[in-house]
Image (tube, rainbow, N blue to C red; front, side, top):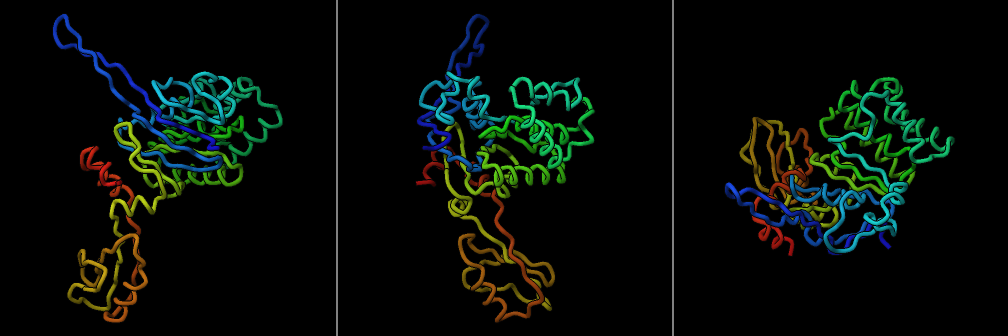
Length: 325
């Protein structure tokens, strides 16, 4: 049985807008429109899509904050909307643009309050806190009021708070938003360690597609409330007809390189760029270039997943769904 299971999940909101001095128009907006998927225990899955696609609405239903309009939803065998308090003991949630910490209290006092709220055994609390403080480098921040923390420091503090009670599943909604490069790297390394050592199931929504590439082997793409893709990253690149780049440094300037299976992109002095399908092996191409041109060096650049997603969002919803069949 999947640890997280959704069957034809729907969420419909009623929106009213003024159409005249004394008239209002009512219409329905389907934020989530018949989504079905399962996530196994210990998986780390990317859940991505444009603004308004339905990502955060899905997370809110998974946590019990919102009640589905239709379909079936279970997390660890629990219906989130019916047993929200019971489920809270088994999940952790981080919303990147909101904090669960107490604004005017030092970070350590927020953690002490959560210690009592979740009724965490003292030994378990101390062990988890020490581990989070060490891996997320929070030691110097424990006595600082939350309102004085930078965004990156607060995000690390929020992630630690979500993990003090050893949740079995962690929902991350934009966990690296606004973070600098160093903070992002620190958070990603922590999440990898958490998943590898404790088997925590992670569902990650983000606009930073580097998060997905570095953390997740499986990715789901949602748009207009519907699931557009569910599979491996490699499959996403294949669907979007991604290309890898072979960057060739030559001993001297030459005419554009022409070899089977690749297309010339551009040249700058002795450096040339060749594009080839992401699903193809680079070995035959490298051999062909080396056999016919005076090489100094070469490298292969992997495709940019952001370009694939942008291509998917480029047409209408019907066009994009048609491309998946």
